[in-house]
Structures are given as structure tokens and as C-alpha cells.
View (cartoon, rainbow, N blue to C red):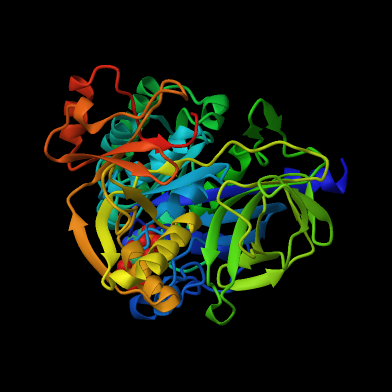
Length: 535
Ligand code: G4P
């Protein structure tokens, strides 16, 4: 195998998804710790008030009033080169969070054992499931009171519509957490609390060893034997192929904070996932091991450095090897270019790079030529990666400039910020150009928009919140079909027809109920939850 092939083969690029507070940061930190990328726990996220985050730039970004970011972390572990994509979760939840998932080949879903599936887990899961990427579940915080493990697995299956296979099984929880039963090796791994150690001390013992009752108590031992029997009888078989197609989620129980089960999880995860996956470009499939370089832009971040007003385009290398001094072809711009100041990110630290391989994420300086979804490939090639979908915003405001004389700057600013992908903008069929409806996935983007319009375009905003929470694209059956007219649609009072700036028609809804109402009463009307992409 050539070095080039070996380099690609050892890469794993994944996202960690969770509802806020489930333990995503803690788990990420433990991975980095095992990989030697950080020296001690607490470096990624300090105590609450000093969130001087390596993976979480939020505070820094917020101070600058800049669109908040998802970061990427690369580290080495037992021969693997691992790229973790961080998906911001708190107030900084945004469309970027979803788009980042487009760059991942698999996802780790962290669930709080006491809470189960939560709102943001559901949303992020849906985006991963859309591409059928493998999803691994880590049920966290078993050192605290947790819900019944059978119930948790059932909830995953029922709420998310994915089969589960428990790789290990917890023995008690909270103060009574005794460890896990490793189903594959048929061994009990006994837990002794050892916070912040590299790995929690684990003793392996066979389930029929009489010493087990001594270790975990007779009652627990009997319960475990019953549960294993139930599990073996009731659960579906483990099928790696179904895991790799996102149909079966391997479930692990553990505790990120105390390290318990984290390293075995990481090892199993690396064993079950694959090297970087191919991507579709229309009829073509671009394989990671293709000799020629290709990449797509999945995120653009403006003004990371205010003094320079720079924009960084983040791209996922799909195939081949990127070399800093080589020319590449930018399909959408129809130009050969040299990517300038290529860099890789270790969270807040940026490092200039000379080369990168399929699976890696690189950031390049963008003089304003890139858009989300753009394709870069070797000169002479001409394929276009399938577009990145547009995700439905959930919060809407009507905005206009306080000073009507500044209408032009206002529109220019709003359109430019929308082009970067932080916000989506709409107009109603009859509205003039004075006002715009803005839709965002996370409300922080409204503040960012207001700040940037003031700082960069000298425009003060008048804003009015709108009661909508859902957006659906009206699917055109054929390209030449005339646009729908409002009077031809049966809409309830809390739904509204809007248009985006590309001429797509969309409907805004205040409730899930009205989506159903509209679908039932308008025969032939097809609505889509994602825009611009075929799945
Ligand atoms: P997030 O990134 O998903 O938002 O979650 P994060 O890792 O920040 O964890 C949220 C809280 O849960 C943190 O406590 C963290 O210490 C705690 N936690 C994470 N994993 C475990 C676990 O396995 N067991 C227990 N008992 N707690 C866990 P915090 O008090 O909010 O923050 P901090 O003061 O510890 O920083």
C-alpha cells in the first residue's frame, strides 16, 4: 500500500451530536486526552464561568459579535488520524451545525442516561439519517441516576426509527453503578470510580464466576443474568453492514466524566467505522482513494479576524491529496486557483498546512469567491458535488431599516450575510423591497445579524418577531410549472406563502398541525423539509 493510500485509510471523520448538557464536550475532551492532543482534562472546557474553550469558541466569537462557529479537531490515536467535527449546541445552534454534519462520515450520538432522547438529539439525528451515515450511541452519565436501559433503547428505536444493538449493558446506575457487561467478550467490566484518570480502573470477570456475586452483590448478579438472557433473546442480531448503512446503531453505556467505558467505546467505534466515504457528484461517485484532489465547501465564516475582514471557507477533502502549492479548479467560479493560506484547525489554534488527505477538513482564505456547496477538483476535471441541502429555519423576524434612506445598504448587507449561509431571507409575493423576512435555525443569529448590519453596513434595524416555527419548500413537479398563487392555495390563518431570492416558493407555519391541515386540503401539493437537494 502506498503512503498515500495508507494515509487515507487511517482517517476517520465524525461529528459528535447531542442535546446541550448530555456530555458532548466532556466526551470530546476524553478522546483528545487519550490521543495526547491535550495534556489534561479541563482544557477543552474549564469551569462554567471560564469556558475558555478549545472546542467552543462561542464566548470569543460572541464578544466580537460574529457568527458563531463549529470547529474541527484533529488528533492521532493508535495509528488512526481522527477528525472530530464539533456541532455547536447551545444558543449558537445554527444552520452551520447542520451543514457541518454534511462533512462527517459517521456520528456519535451522546444521550444523557437520565433524560433519553431530547429535542436537539432528534433534529441532529434526522440530518444524519438523511444521508444514512453510521450512528453510534453513547448513553452517558451512568454514574448518576439513569432510566431503565431497556426503556432507553426502546425510546431510541421508537423516537428515532433506528434499530439498536447494545454492545455492553450497564449494571446498576448512580451510586449503585457497578460496571458494564461486555456482550461480545461475555465479561463483566467492574467499575471503580477514578475521576480524571486516563481510564477508569476496570476488572474483567466472567459472569458465571462466583466472585462476581461478591463484587456486585447477589441480587445484581441475578438481575444481570436475567437481563442478558432477555437481551440475547429479544434484540436483533449484530450486523456490521447495517451499522455502516445507518440502519442499526450500536449502543454503549458509560460515563464520560469518570472515564468509564470511554476508551473501549472509542476503540470499538474506530473498528466499526470506515475510512472516508465516497461522495456523489450527479451520476458520478467520487471515491476517497481517487488519485485526484477534490473537495466541497460546507461552511463559510466571515470576519474571523475583524482587523482583516477575512472570510474563511471550510472544505472537506473528498478524494486524493491536497498540496498547498498546487492549482485546483473551482467549478462554480470556472477558474483555476491556488488555495490561499490553507490551514487546519485545532479548535482556536490555526496551523498552516502543506498537505491534507481525503477525510480532512481545511480552511482557506476566501476573497469572496466561494459559496456553500462549491466544488473544487483537479484541473481538467469537471464534476459538481451534489448540493448541500438548505435546512428549515425555526425562528422568523420581519426586518427593515429604521432609516428608509438606507434601504440599499440594508438589502446589500442582508443579502451578503444570507449568502454566507448564516440566515435565510424571504419576501412575500406582494411585499416591496423595504422589508425582508429573516429565518434562522438558532436565535443567536438574529443578534449576529443586527450587530453586523450596524457594524459593517451602518444600518439600524427595526425588527418584529413572527409566530412561525416551521418552513416547508413547495416541490415543483416540473421545472416549467408556473408559481403557485396565494389565492389558489387553501391556507389557515397561521400559514403564509413566501419566496426566497432564488424564486423558490415556501410556506411558513406556526404549528405542525397546520402543515397537516394544508397537506390534507391541497391535493397535489408536495412539501419538502429540506431545500435544494435530492435525497
Ligand atoms: P455538552 O457539551 O453536551 O453541553 O455537555 P458537557 O460535556 O458540557 O457536560 C454537561 C455537564 O454534565 C457538565 O457539568 C459535565 O461535567 C457533566 N457530565 C458530563 N458527563 C458526565 C458523566 O458521565 N457523569 C456525570 N455525573 N456528569 C457528567 P456542569 O456542572 O454543567 O459543568 P462543569 O462545571 O463540570 O464544567
